[in-house]
Image 1: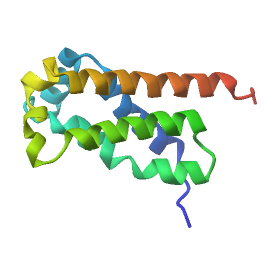
Image 2 (image 1 turned 180 degrees about the horizontal axis):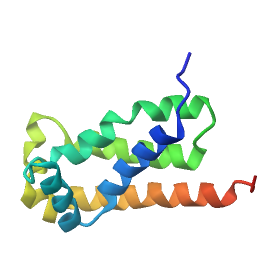
Image 3 (image 1 turned 45 degrees about the vertical axis):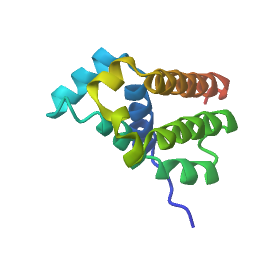
Length: 125
């Protein structure tokens, strides 16, 4: 039986998506503020740590199909970038200039757009 997902948990997930959507300079500032500006993988790990919410929120109808699709696309891209063979993707230089990070930002922006559309389409209480 899936867990019930709180609004705070959903908010934490979307915050992680937002961090992936930011320009590299802002992402680096977030990493510096957290204590290690070189730990580029922390951006993806923060998102990954909150991904369990997606399955539970889906079963509770807390995310739309479009939101789910966008989040899964983002997740697939991060998975493609991961692994020992792809360790070069997790450097400051990569964050600033590699196409894979441009793709991550584009996918994260698309997911945030789906979230905003879903909020607008929900009837007022």
